[in-house]
Length: 434
Image 1 (cartoon, one colour):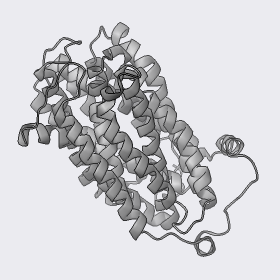
Image 2 (cartoon, helix red, strand yellow; image 1 turned 60 degrees about the vertical axis):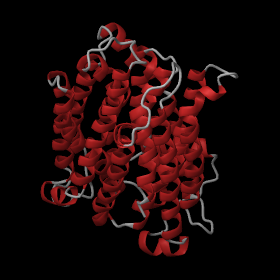
Image 3 (cartoon, one colour; image 1 turned 180 degrees about the vertical axis):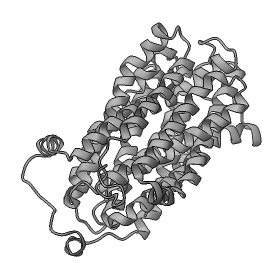
């Protein structure tokens, strides 16, 4: 039931590893990159709670969550096809604005497809199996992200597809990667839609009780109400998520310019050279490595959590990831940055699994979808804050040296690790709420 996440992460990997490069190709300055990236968390903040609200109240021939998977997959696949070709519509608007608009549509589609997957795992599994369920989901996310991240490098270096293009044009290897990702995204989602079963409402009540609530409020009013009455555990996890996702946003936005300037010795505005494309392709390899490590490490998370508890598991993973990001300043050889990404992968595996496993035991089963959607506020809000201030900080506080944004991200992951120790995990019978 998590196989579709492999396809979703194909899309996210291509976006995370290449959106900054594509936007710079279309004319974006480094200090403005985080502003363009704002469209992603803004759409997620709006889309995910709404999808959660309506999917809690949906029952069709395809079930409760699956209609949203399918609609999101079709739209996201179209976005992946159009994103690297924004210059074709340059007669209407500048390619940069078209690219940013497609990024918004693409990310909204990712969110439509992604949010119900979290709720589906929580719907179908009891608490004692949810850590394993989210770990398997993380494993598939990692596999999809590895292949998706490596595609531009593979097409260029292994298959000989052109990695440079005319000024204002996206190289062919990047375009081919996006086309391939669009196909995989759609096929993976279709696999889950076709092969997965969901509990009909009557059968669901036998296992989880009649907690489903169908208030007559409009969705926005209901979301605000549920947000105001969120469980204590969810509030505590919100602090952890703020530090974690502020750090991740910095990594996704600024790793390419950081490598180009700090490790490849390029000027901050040298975005059309073959060496800049080499830096961008190597970022894809690095991102693939951290996702690959996450996929493997996710398989060990249930055993580790059973032994030391979910909170302590998340604490150590975030601490390792923070040290890994800070090490990118010290390590100057791009090849050795693979070690930094191993550490980041440990944190990424835990970020994708542990908060959801902890949260699922603290929220009513009848509101699983809407609360999983509301929980996305704690993912999107820090990215929005970072999007607003991250670029100016690079320009004015860091002297146009994006590498310092990665160092700061490492510090924030350490703060996230400290914060997780204060979270109450109601489902952790061994450690209780200590």
